[in-house]
Amino acid sequence: MGDSHKPNLTFDCGTDRVLKAEDPFHVAHQELMDEFFRGQRRSLSLSYQTYENNKDNENNKDKEDLGTEKEKQYKFRRYQYSNPMERAFGIVKDDVVSFFKGHKKYFEEVKNETSEKTETKADTACREIYDFDPSKSDVAQNLWPTYCDVLVVGGGAVGSSIAYHLKETARDGLNVVVVEQDPNYTRASTVLSVGGIRQQFSIPENIQLSMYGMEFLRKSPALLEVEGLQAPDIQFNPNGYLTLASEEGYEQLRANYELQVELGAKVSFLSRKELSQMFPWLNASDVVAGVLGRENEGWFDPWSLLIGLQRKSVALGAHYVKGRVSGIVQETVDDMILEGTAHSNVKRLLSAEVTLGNGETHLINFAILVVAAGAWTGEVGRMTGIGEGRGILNTPIPIEPRKRYVYCVHAPDGPGLNSPLVVDPNGTYFRREGLGGLYLCGQSPPHDKEPSVDNLDVDYSFFEDNVWPSIARRAPGFENLKLRSSWAGFYDYNTFDQNGIIGLHPLFSNMFIASGFSGHGIQQAPGVGRAIMECIIHGRYETIDLERFGFDRILARDPLYESNIV
Image (cartoon, rainbow, N blue to C red; front, top):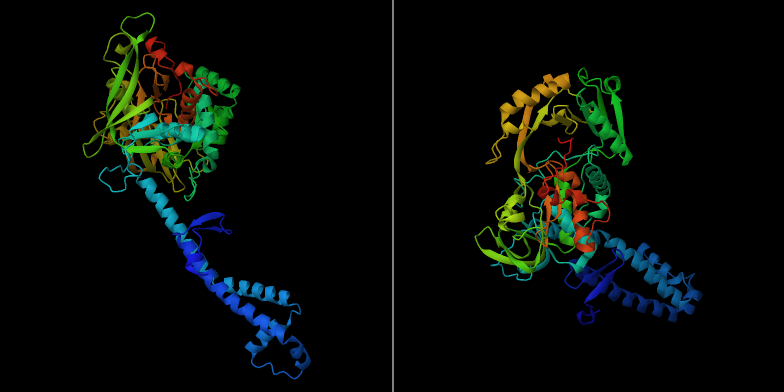
């Protein structure tokens, strides 16, 4: 075949994909097929000529000198078919087999090279999700999104889950943009958490959110699969949570357990004796009972979940922008006013000013704004006047950063492989990290001793004075340990009642809030993403009713306290 007869597209039956002309696999495939068919024309010509003398050959076959071994093999192929068409197609069949056997290694090398290039391009695309640069020549890839249907402020687990659920449901029906000021997530709550997931809560909505979160994690390799990339591995460890209670907390623990069982959680209520039998390394002398998660509890890798959500969102068409929301434009709806106040006209948000790393500012117009900025949600709220106005605007979004420490220790005599994530009655926790005698541990400080949030420095005296004595008292094997590493991260702490704020702000017709989870946002991110999607697309909660988590409770001074805060 000459080049003029080459098609622009070719269908590769081995991979079920359409190959473009510039695809290296297509080029190699076309060249080899050209070479092959040129050879077949010669073979068919020879086979036809042998038929002409077939009769003479048959008469003289006993006298014919078959020559060398190679000539014998060739002449055998000439005479094994009596029908000329059978002979022709038989030769083609044999040549096809030998041809592709001879070039199998070459084809595999070209295919592997193509696959590696595809994966490299996909990885590069993911790494460059935030690299908007208006000076680049590739305008198509770096076109600034001047308008979107939904603008999500915050690209952590919650924000990326919202983007994923919106795009997974609406596909091209919604244009979604995510703005994140810290694409390396050096200060984000998501990647600095210990990755725990549990159903042991005291509020039904929290239990249901985490139950959906576990279902999502279980299906995440399929749900978050992106062509050309390896499926995310969240590295789930199903060792469960063990929540301990002293005599003072026994009744609350029992009530929580009964609620959890009623909602379908797989948990067991254990007495002191049962705890000692099941966990010989545990000092239960001052513990009266505990609740152990039997299924759907444990810990996982938060980073893998975040990257999986982000990559899938982008694959579905979401656009991520590296930048900081520095201003929000709004308008007042003059003909709408909330009943009971003369200063609270309903408002509509129109656009956000985004400041890039080089100092440039750009506007993004939107129809709906979702604030999922974690610990900095309160700051975004103030840009709209929340907390700095009159009437309803006088009430701020009560979310602020709170610094928490995580310590990694090596304890050769520690609890071992059968250790769940243990939560002490005083709030101290520890869990196994891998298989080499490493453990993560930490504790929330008293309210009057909250550390400064000006930096992410670790207070090692807090470990010496508070964390180590607590875990060593609960598991004596921790008396012999060595501190290996540590880090600090921020909770998006809801100072009002330590629970998430989810849903529309009552004064803004197009502003949703999804933040303030105070330490359990990573495990509830899938459920919150689905809930916000339902509100935007369906106008209501369809699976889990989260109305009680709305901003109205802040205005009504009606806190919804969670007793199991870790």
